[in-house]
Every structure is written in C-alpha cells, then in structure tokens.
Amino acid sequence: MAPKSMPTEPDEGNNGRRSVRGRSSRSNETGRFEPYHRESVDDGWSIADVDETERVDTTLTAEKAKSIISRNASPDIGFDRSVNPYRGCEHGCIYCFARPSHAYLGLSPGLDFETKLFFKPQAATLLRSELSKAGYAPDRVQLGANTDCYQPVEKRLRITRSVIEVLAEFQHPLGITTKNHLVTRDIDLLAPMAERNLSVVVISITTLDRQLARAMEPRASTPSRRLDAIRALSDAGIPVIVSVAPIIPGLTDHEIEAILEASANAGARYAHYSMLRLPHELKDLFKEWLAAERPERAERVMSLVRQMRGGKENDARFGHRIAGEGPVAQILVDRFRLARRRFALDRKIAPLRTDLFRTPPKPGDQLTLL
Image (cartoon, rainbow, N blue to C red; front, side, top):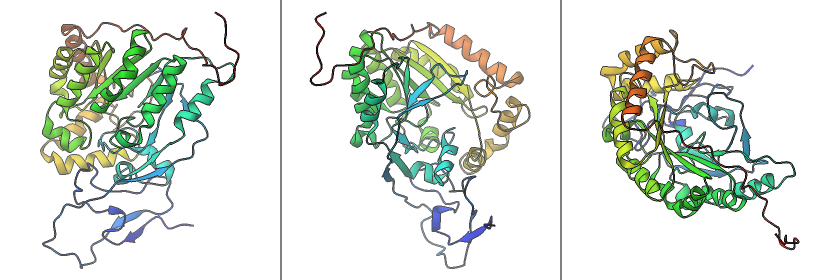
C-alpha cells in the first residue's frame, strides 16, 4: 500500500509556506487523489538571509481533448453546456471553486492550479464538429464557466477567440464569464452577435479594493480595469451582467453596494451574486491564505462562513451552495437585492436566441436558392 506521508526537500513541489511572487497560494498541498502526501521539512541547510519570496514560472501543456462541450444538470446555473479552453488558471484567485478540479490531473489545487496550465489547441475544430452533428439542438453555451477563458495566456494562444469565431459562424448563442479586460479584444465578434441577441458577458467583481484584489486574485485584471471592460462592452451594445462573486463575509461583504453602484455607472444591465464556496482542498488553501494575508480577520471570516453553511465550512447541496442559509446569509442576500433594485440592475436580460442557429455549408456543398 502506498505511504500517505513522504517528506520532500524544502524546495521540491513548492510545499513551503513562503509567499510566491504574483501567486495567491501559500502552499502546494497534495491533491486528494494522489497516493503520496508531500510535506515541507526544514533540513537545516536553508540560508536565513535569503529572500522569502520565490518565483514560480507558468508552464503550458497541450491537451488532446476528444470533445469540447461539457454538459451539466445543475439547477443552480442558467445553462446546461460550457466550453473550457483551459484547465488551471493563472489568475490565481485564492477563492476559486475550480481549484479542486486540478486534483483529477494528479496535481495540487494550490500552486499547481495557477502555474501548471493545460490548453486545448483543437477546441475550435472540435466545436465545429460537435455543432455540425445531426440532431444537435442549440442552447446557450458558456465560456469561462470553470476557469477563466481570458486568463493571460489567451492573449497569445487565442483559443477563446477561435471558439467565438465558430459560434458566430453557426449563429449560436454564447455567454462569457470573465474577470479580465482582455474580453474587450473580441468586441468585433461579440457586438454583431449581440445585435442578433446571441451574446452576453458576465464580468466578475469581488472587491473594489486594489490592494486586496492583488493579494486575493493576483493576475486578474484590476477592479478598475474590469469596470472599464463593462463600459467598453456596454458602449458596443453588448449586454453585461456584473457578478458580485464570491461574497466573502467579514472581508468583502461591506462592498456589495459600492460594487453594484460602480457597475451600474459603467453600463451593466443586470447583477447576480454567489457566496463563498470552499469545496475539498479549497478549505485549507483559503484558511491558509487568510492566516497569512488577513490574520486579524481570519477567525471572524470563517465563523461567518460556518454560520452560512449550517455549521460546516462548505455545503455542496444544490439550492444552498450559491446562496447559503441562515440569518447571516439572508442579511447579505437582502442587502444585495435592495441595492440591485436601487441601481436598476434588476432588469432581466432577454434569453438568447436559438432560432438563428444554422450549420454553415462545407466547401462543395450545394447552396440553397432561398
């Protein structure tokens, strides 16, 4: 039977508690499916005067996917399919609910999640094939539902853009969730789709505090740049939803009203929210970050989280994981709804159209006379 604990060298796997430049994870704890558990040890050879910050570069690995459309049956979200061009996310948001998915790759949801990225170079080709299948029924496909489709590597790889080009060609409805200003690069594709009610963009804003954002979501666009993205998209006629997500009680909840007001002023049309979720390994990663970055608030934050989760640190039940439960959660939800109404962000956006979907002709196909 494989041993469950195996000491490593201090710098192997970055399991120490040193801060890493531009990263939010304080450790690289073993994923739940790995046979060995790595622990940091001090062998006495470290140099006391060495800089306590380290640098860990991002690595990219091409993934040969067999399909590109992922399906879900969750009643908590407004779509049943998504496309994820990337696995792992360089934004490095410490609260990201997708972190535990890296364990399925035999990697850590900690530092590995934000430094060991996988990309799908054939995403557009696979999508074209799946949309062209006989009997395919169109409905909104969401980009960025798991990891951000506009994380920094997209500027060079342009996989997300190639996926949007295919969706535009098929006149297929599209939703995007991101916290990166890079989405504005693709206004030339998204605006014509929006004219036909085929596109909507969700911009996530967790805090307006730039210092907190840098510590909590180090490689995402700054809050002001996200507001700029809302403005640019809105000015181009693309409907924008602001997502106050996640609301972290005792840390960011006091900003609910300010985020909604700023987003409304930038042109957002609607707003929704989600409460902090801490599944699997994320619980320890987040608590470790709190203890290092906001030690004076750590105990209070986790107490409030437990009060919203029936005494636990996470609740995965449908209908509860987004909104939480109990008096603390209800107060935050009531505040959100009142502010949303006050800033006119409660105007429902019309469902995206599916009746325009068509499979474009292939080279050599007979063209219709209509």
